[in-house]
Image 1: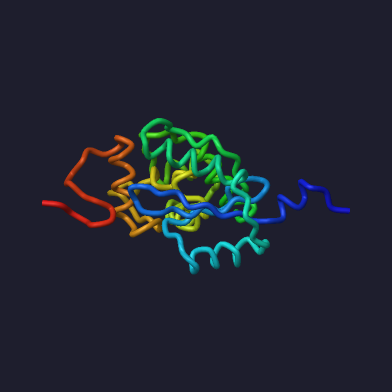
Image 2: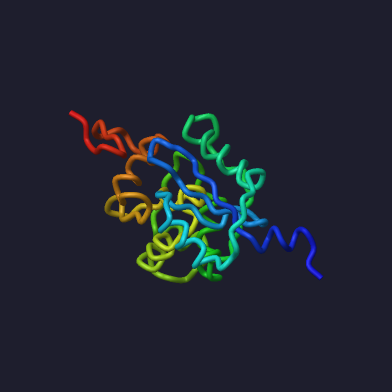
Length: 189
């Protein structure tokens, strides 16, 4: 027999949050946020459904906390995302590394791939930590943008790539502004 909580956990609800980076898609199970995509649309939603393999339901009450948290972050009213997370898409290594990131690297701070590897006790080289960051299904909330290379920014798989990472780090005050850049339009003169 399946209870109400099992039904919630075994379904997926989508929400779109309008942000300076464009519309962000959040996919929320009964356990919490399981997916965040820097683009919303049929393809992004289909990727989330394929990854999570759950039926989609409309559940604004379930998704409201994540849209509110994203709005507060971009309005500079909150520095942390106080929303439950669903870690089901993470391998044990990914979860070890990304939970360490989530709990130890606050807003406005930076760490390197090597440092987060050491801190997490993952026992893998910095390049493997970079791959973990690139496979993070909940970017921004699990802040892989705060992890940089020892020689520069490193890569970023969210949004339009490294420019989104740079924008987020400037937004959080971790990097000084280097140019006037709009995430939707590119550099401004």
